[in-house]
Amino acid sequence: AVPISQRRLMDVKLGELPNWAASRDFTPNGILSAVRRGHDRFYNKYINVKKGGIGGVAMLLTGYVVLSYIWEYDHIKHDRWRKYH
Amino acid sequence: MLSRLILVSAPVLKSSAPLGAGLVQASRSFHTGQQSLAPVPALPEKGGKVRFGLIPEEIFQFLYPKTGVTGPYVLGTGLLTYLLSKEIYVINHETFAAASIGIVIVYGIKKFGPSVAAFADKLNDEKVAKVQEVKGLAVSNLQQAIEDEKKEQWRAEGRQNLFDAKRNNVAMLLEINYRERLHMVTSEVKKRLDYQIALQNLQRRMEQEHLVSWVEKSVVKSITPQQEKESIAKCITDLKMLAKIEQARATV
Image 1 (tube, rainbow over the protein chains, first blue to last red):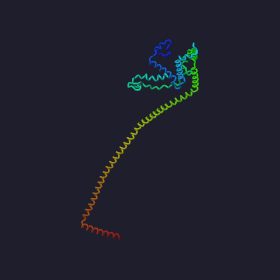
Image 2: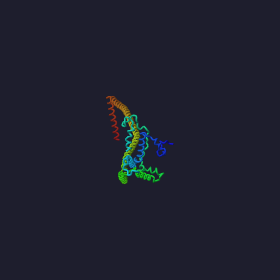
Image 3: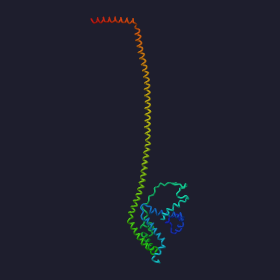
Image 4: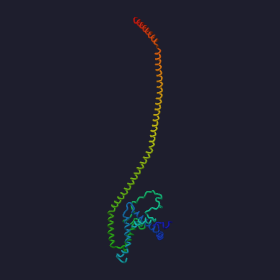
């Protein structure tokens, strides 16, 4: 059928995931274009509309919060209430 | 934030020419492809649906066949419990701050959301109306120009009539001129002929008068004194006879 590199991610079976990850384009240009594609999808779906809701901005802010929590986790680790979980 | 970085760095990466992005190279040419005349697709009305303002609807649809309606909620609860119990999410003073901020934000959005949205829509509508007005004005101007152009074309056609009228005028002038000259010619010729006639009449009359006077003169000249006396004597005798006859008639 269709080769792995040209299938959508939802159509790739779970066992073929490593193959799919290997077939992606990892050149700087490829990465940049992937980021641009992702940004365009998000932007055109949630922000570039006539009556946008809170969803678009809220998702971006939540993502920012989560990312900064992850980056600060090594520091926050020391505020844990119990030593063994 | 990341997107803005992309937007700033993309042109720098694209222009690989050593001259830089400001100068246009001679080798580049614009507008070489086919121009697509399809109208620009309109913006979608609403964004993608989001539940709780955070979680896209697609996740709920993705999990629905396997887990039904409550699937994502159970997933969320389980995830939250796991994060809390393993203290991957640590509860500290920041949690309290985040909670208060979250409550304030949610309250603010619920209360002021619709009015702010209406205001933003009004601004947008004003912008669109202004641009539409410009476009409408341009369209009406161009239509007016089309009307004027058609009128001018109609007028240009009407010029034929003008030429016909002028041609008629010129023909009439020529005719008038011709007739004037004809009249002048006839009157001149008539004048000359009249002159000749008058000349002839004059000639004849002068000849007649001259002849008559010449005859009179010759007659008068031919009456010699002798003949004059004889004629006078005869006249006297005639008169006497007549007187006698008259006398005789009167007495009878």
